Each structure stands twice: as structure tokens, then as C-alpha cells.
Figure (cartoon, rainbow, N blue to C red):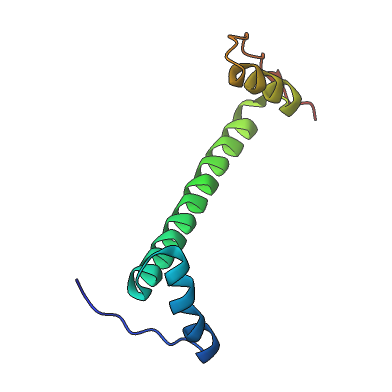
Amino acid sequence: MSTTTIRLDDALKERIPAAADLAGRTAHAFIVDAIARTVEQVEAQEELHRIAEKRWAKLLATGSFVPWDDAKKYLAARGRGEEPVKPPARKLEH
């Protein structure tokens, strides 16, 4: 494990021990967890953007899509434990 130095403004540095206590963590563990969560969030956002770009490219290439209202109804029914028929894809009209 390596050591990294970070600079914190005094006000934030003073708040960390109390926040760590409330979370039941040491200040070190609290900071490491906060950094890990932020890294995971950025990575998840990047993955979401990658998937969205791929799907957008597919939509542009094929012109096929499922309208959001149809998809939302389908997903809501699945969430209720039903087995609805998948909504058909439509062609994008220009």
C-alpha cells in the first residue's frame, strides 16, 4: 500500500473526525471510503455513458427504437412480477 498526501482546507479537515465518528469509522477509513465511492461513481458514470453512446449509435444505424412510454409500462409490469410481451421496436421517423 502506498502513501498519498492530500491538501485539505482547514474547515474540511476539522469536520472529518466528527463525520467519521458518526459513521463509526476512523478518520483514515472515512477518507479512504469517500475516495473509493467517488472513484466508483465516476467509473459507473463512464460505463453508463459508454453504454448510452453504443445504444445511440445503434439507434442511428438501424433507426429502430422502443418509445419510452412503452418501455416504462413494460418495466413497471416486470417490476410487479408480471410477464408482459416486450414492446415492438418502431422505426425512427425523420
